[in-house]
Image (tube, rainbow, N blue to C red):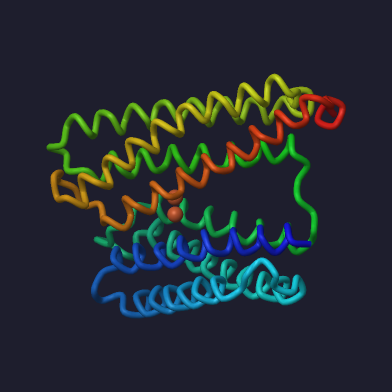
Length: 271
Ligand SMILES: [Fe+2]
Ligand SMILES: [Fe+2]
């Protein structure tokens, strides 16, 4: 029961801050005349700010039923912001907002994160977490693509005159594109690919790349913060993508621990 409360609060604390920041980024990218979109983004910003604040008012002794109700409320908010992001993506792709400055891939990306958030809450409330071997593949497919996108965003939002850094970002982008394909391959090979040695190698290999991307993001964040490099990256966006890499590493660590735990009893993991 405690696990349900702890995991729910952990997801909500992390992702509600992320959703709040997405609303800010979207708002900053709209044109001055798009007052309705700006107002809508502001509304989501305060909705998720409020959710984030309330999530810290609960502790792990909270009544699971209360948390279940809270999860449902947050899930609805996540669904609404997801729909808003998809609507904005539609407008951009139909060239109805010429001159706005959010990349379509960024809008799609933040909608995928909203979708992930609402799915996590749905799973928690249904008490149906994926079996470990499926979770390992699905979380990696999701997060590797997220990391690949981040490398693209950084590369495209740095000033073109920052040639060395742009080159480095491109290197990460290529590296993560390959990792995404590897993860998709492993996914297609299910369930036969879900052996402990393969999954364990998969997690290890991904972790090495995520750690180095995380370090690159940290450096970029610090350089932006200190105004040492030229870019149009908002300092909060630099920190945001750094935190998402940290989140992925935390999940990879959990998988690693679970895999070393089940090594003793392989039957539990091999289909
Ligand atoms: Fe994000
Ligand atoms: Fe992201």
